[in-house]
Length: 288
View 1 (cartoon, rainbow, N blue to C red):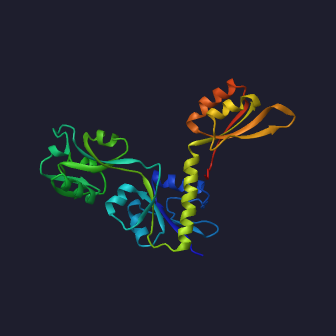
View 2 (view 1 turned 90 degrees about the vertical axis):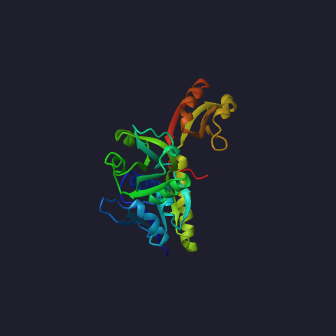
View 3 (view 1 turned 135 degrees about the vertical axis):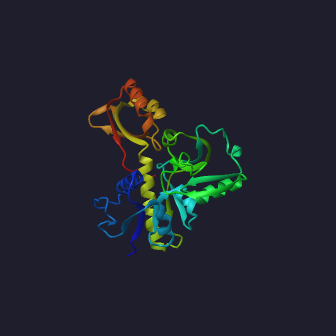
C-alpha cells in the first residue's frame, strides 16, 4: 500500500489552518505539538511531514513528499519543477516594492538606474527590476527586511504584506505591487497511479470543506401554499427538499442549503410567509 506523504508548514497561522483543513476533510491525524515532525492516519494511508514553508517545494520536487502546501510567492521564487494542483482561499498576501516615506519616488520608473534592494525573494526581485530597465544589487535577507532602508543597507525593499501595517510602522511606502499570493497545493510530477488516486481524494475532500464554509443548512416548517414563493428565493443546490408532516395537511418541512450571506434575509422572508421552527446548521462538507 502506497502511503501519500503530505508536507505542510511546521509553524505559524498557515500551518494551523492547513492542519485543521485536513482534519475537517476527514484525514484525522493524532494531536501534535511544536516538536512533532511527522504524523500518520490510523489506516496508514496518509502521512504529514512538518517542514519549513520555504522547503516544501524542494521536498515535493525530490519526492520526499508527494504533495505539499506552500505559498504561491515561494513557488514563484524557487521555480520548482512541481505541479500546482489547487489554489486555496487563505494565506493571502501581496509582494510589493516599498521605499522610505520621505523619498520622492512615486513609481518604479522614478527610481535610479542602479539601486540596492533588500528582499527574501532575490530571484523575483532581480527579474522584476531588470524588466523595468534597472540594474539591481540584490541584498538577500531572511527577515526584518523593513528595517534595512533606515540602516542604509538598501534603497528599496521587496517584501510580502497582508495589510501593509508593518511597512507603515517602519515608515515605508508602497510604490508598486509585483504579485498576489495565496496558499497553494503542489504535487510531485512523477506520482504513480495509486498516489494520484489518493491525491484526487484529498483534493475533492478539501474542496468539499472549502465550499461548505460558504453555506448553511436551513430547515423550516412552511405552509404548502407558500412553496412556490419560497422556492424563488431559496432554490438550494438544485431545489429545496420537501417532506410531509405527520397529521398535518397544510404544512411541510423544507430542507435547503443556502449561501451563508443570504441566511439573515431568508429567515425574515420565511417568517413573513408563515415559516416556523426554523433551524440553521453549519455544513461540514459539501460534495457536489
